[in-house]
Amino acid sequence: MRRKKNAPVLGFPDSRSWNCEEVQIMAEPIPTPESASANRRIVAWAVDFAAIVAAAVLLGSVTHYRIADYLSGWPGLAQSGGWNLFRANGDWGGAGKAFGWDVFGEVLLLITEAFLALVLIVFVYHFACLLWKGRTLGKFLLDIRVHALADPDGRLGKWQSARRAVASTVVDVGLYSAACIALLAGKFVLSLALWHIAVLALVVNAAPMASASRRTVIDRIAGTTVVRAGLYQKSWQAARDAAIVERGTRGAQVGLERVQAVSQAMKQHAQHLSEDERLRELRASTQATQLRRLGESAGRHTGETARQLLDSERGQQAQATAKKVGTNLRAVYTRRRR
Image (tube, rainbow, N blue to C red; front, side, top):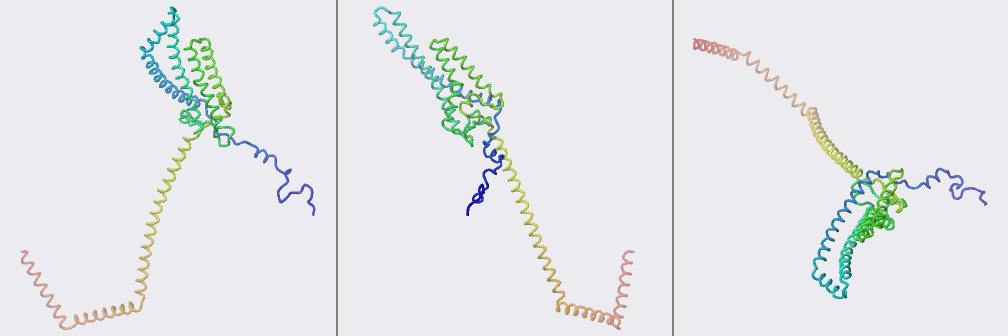
């Protein structure tokens, strides 16, 4: 049997009957979290830069000791200088100048190594933090993080972390280190140019933070953006939920205790009711009726006997005697009072 043309197959609707809005929804990208404000990013950068300055101070101290240790070996340096003068063949000025440049070159090499070490430390710091948690120390304190636009979860890969770390290192310390090295080497024009380039790079990189996207040049190079992490908000929400759960648990415990108390009271009341029911049953039983009748009969019989005893001759005599005794007692009591 032939299938009609344009008929649905196996119960699936025709592809041409799909709604365009559904196709558009399926094609929409996953929205990114809220972008971090410029103030947060600036403060986070200041915290990271303070950590970099601390590392630079430490490296400067180490370099100072290295230079002092090198110059403390002046006997060897003097011996080397004297040997150069002996081989100068009378050109003592040239030999002294060469010796001075050798010493200065060694000192400059130690300083250059310090700057290169600082650049390497900053790169490793940025790369490790971004690859591990997507945030540096400053971003962690300001509750922001770096979000990868190409990844649905926003996690940074090795290549993205390396690109952003390189760009951040060049802007933060790379150009300034190169300018300082050029200045120590006597390249004043190159040093001045590098200083201007470093300041210009810092301004150009930070300028787009005032735009709607708030993506800096480093963000565009690495394919990232800086967003709110919401860690503090989530922690506060978790603490509040825990407090609510704790209050609910306490309320449930109090309610359970109250239910147990009510249940115990109901059991006691039911026990009393059962005892009363037993008493009613006992009262309504035949033996109880017989005992009641016997009691009533005994009471009547005792009353009749007492009346007969009082009405008898002995009873009257006993009454008369009791009256006389009472009269005598009153007379005695009256005489004693007088």
